[in-house]
Amino acid sequence: MPDAIFVDPRLTQFYDAFEDSRSDLTHYLHIARELHATTVVDIGCGTGAFALLAANEGLHVTGVDPAAASLDVARAKPGADHIVWHLGDATTLPAVRADLAVMTGNVAQVFLSDDSWNATLAAVHTSLVPGGHLVYETRQLSDRAWERWARDTTATVDLSTVSATSPNAQSSKTSNCHSSHSGTNTTSPAASGSSPPPRCASEATRRTEPHSITQDSP
Image (tube, rainbow, N blue to C red; front, side):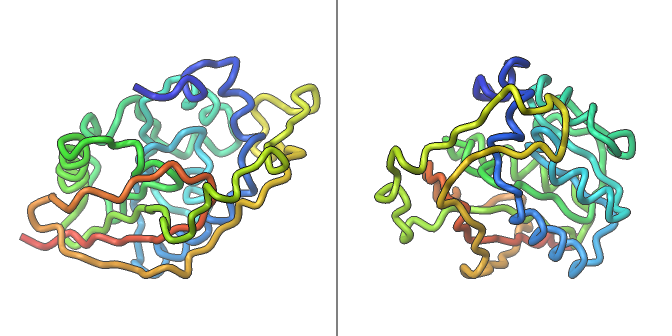
């Protein structure tokens, strides 16, 4: 079940305003180029930030998310008609046969049990071509970001100045969040569609460890 901020239209229309510039997403574009991917599945696409970036690069993109209100925002953005939007999750995806599947931001942290994580990995395995990749993030617990959480880093947004569907909506948020992709890049085989459960934590910063899982050829 998605959080209320993703399913309530009164909240979802302002979601992008609370986000950073999402400069972290360019890292995924670099990976797509490095892998020569042409078809991408954006799992947990939300309001479409990465899906739109990838489509703008000329990639064939399918965005999947369980929150209808988030998809409504995504579909209203310029360029959205170049993307296939799917309401659901990885386990309900139609046949895609993608080169690359991504879980950006906190998506990989929403799975709270081994069963849900393994079911998702199995579904991703099915949606990828042989030799395809899954790329996702986990938080760097060694950063201990929660020790820096304080009221003076709380986000403040003047909702009266925010366009409900503008992809470029900016906020007056002040935050110590930043993108850091200097962590260890881990590559491991996913022959059976399984993988150890991810390290989960509810950190607010974007200090991440990118992971790439390669789909074995049959």
